[in-house]
Image 1: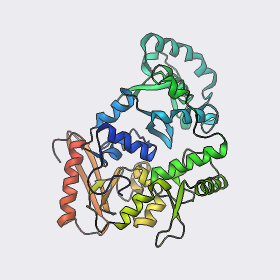
Image 2: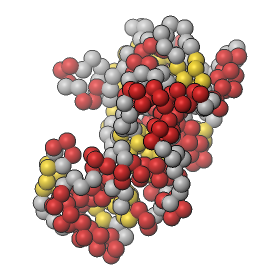
Image 3: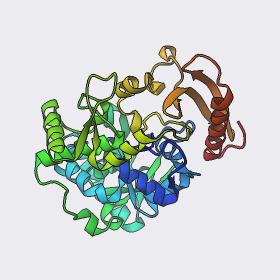
Length: 375
């Protein structure tokens, strides 16, 4: 918890705190659904003192220190890591999936899009003025301008210039990302080194991770044998070390430069507990089987589960208190109010005493984060 900035006093604050956290975990997964905050904002709210939603948008679209692109699915990561992912887009992980999708129809309107961006600086699908549709992502029928813009974005020609709600405007990447970033040398030279770099990055995102099939590897084209080789390479090179946890039948792995932090946490007699609401796609939650094994907490994000089959709610957030999960809460923002639809505790008993007090303090912070005037 301490390594994730979820224990004791806040160690991250302001824009520099956001950047420090991103560099610690590599990336934060993005999802546009906004019931009580977008996933990335909820992740940061749990860690950054007095976090404001506009901070992320400023770092993305004004300061250009972060970028939204593909890592673990659609994610946000420091702009200095962009060359790695452009390499994947142009000839690696995502090339076969996204390059040339849409074929002749997309190619036909790309010159128009480039002309509009040259004239205006940025363009959205609504600005293109072409009223055609095409079968696109996941076989969904999409507008042709949207498909063309996404195709050019997937290939690394365009960048998201800004967003207005869920409407995206795009611009040329070369106009907003410095050449020294785009032309930077990659941190690996061979496919084996690349896979080791990717595996180490995902270990860093979760904090402690085992060498098993896991959703933590989503977005990587890596086979089991290649993952095994990457773990072996990282361990023999002294970049990760093995940790055994009571009750687990497989070792976990941690970055070697975090050994001192782990030993400091183990030597602490007591930590100051803190209660936070954890985002459904939080880095810490990427491997749900690991969360179940470590904390006995069975969590599923049920937003894509049919209503009649949901056990809890569509947008239920885990409640973290101290070094464990004490329950989950289903909330929504409505008419400037934070509406609590339901609370489920792991014990089955209502929250009381210090747990209730800490929950209410967390709820108050969460309401302010959502710019709500009441609960």
